[in-house]
Length: 311
Image (cartoon, rainbow, N blue to C red; front, side, top):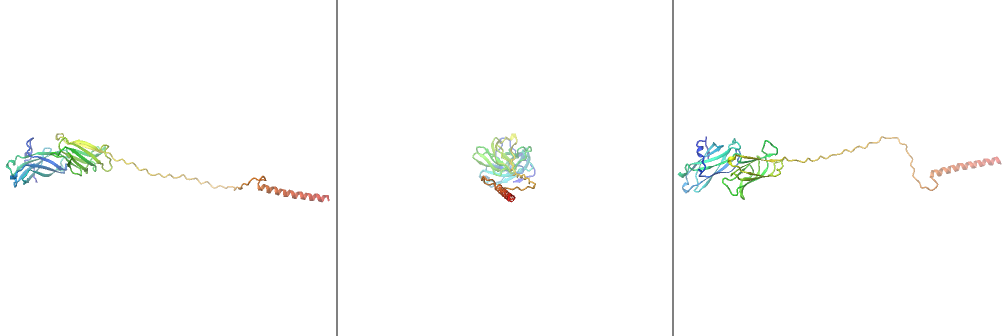
């Protein structure tokens, strides 16, 4: 597969409605600018074609303007086959521009297929037909918020041509139980989905980015729009995580007890109580005894004096 200089003859690869006689489809890839996308083309061949060489002109149109031209050459096997090849979306391509890939056979082992076998265009919007952006609640600038995890399911009932392509998650797209599914973390904060118009898709946020909480209802429902409607962009808002502050322990400083000023105190005599015997306290009894001794002595002295005076 060779990228040519210029886009000469690319207009000749475009089909008119109903003129397609070979099927081309987008089957996988990263739908963002600079991403790589995978296409398939099926061709009918018969045993007489073995050993011959197919030559195909493949052209990329962005917003209906021829932008890149490739020449593809190969030798087929002896049965109908799928030609699978990868193309890079130009890094400078604008989000929302329509990317269409056309192909035309210019040489084949069978003369009847030499110039009239054209593939239907395989088209999608750069950034996804359905573009879902994770953002912080209240962010009017719609800055993508990376790190959320999602489960995506697009119900088709059966495998379709083209299939549904889901990009922007760490997991790959697969078909299971009637739906195209993908799960994983969004490193960019953007999920891009392309596929048949009218396909319903359910996007469930399973884990919020660090510092954020899941929305009150983390399940969202979308529909892949028709090409005529252009790219649809939707937003999923996550509220910032509110943390409850941990109360700081408080230490109460005890009120100091005032120290009384020293004072001169007159010591007081303390006396143990004694039992009341009817005679009064001991000190009183001693006092009476002393008084009686004095009085007794006085009486004796007085008696002696009277005795001397009378004798």
